[in-house]
Figure (cartoon, rainbow, N blue to C red):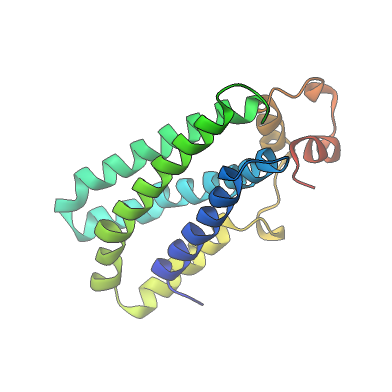
Length: 179
């Protein structure tokens, strides 16, 4: 199992690829941004629940950077939710995609230069591997963490999908692009 630093960096590369493709515009831009949100929300949640606290435990001096990282997560999540409520043809859509991409690139650079080296330098291989296993499990879209109807409903609400309260789990999954 790859260690936590490798897994986080690999997920960063996957999101970067999606953002680059979305910035080019086109009909699939909205779908690409939905995929960014699908990947990013569990990634941020896992970092905040056990990665960032472990970094803070290992390096008290990183406390402010950890706090900033969490704030940046929430800012990007809010921008993504607002973007997903609209349509790729809406005025300002491309600018919002660019703003999200810029924020994420800044966040990733800081995280990879200032926070992840703490894990790489101060944890042994076994603990990095165990954290990597936990992180992969927390962020996977596989059967290990099947999306619940409630989670799908919340995504549909964030995307302002009409009739969501009458939809079953499969209908919600199709409506939000999770099927």
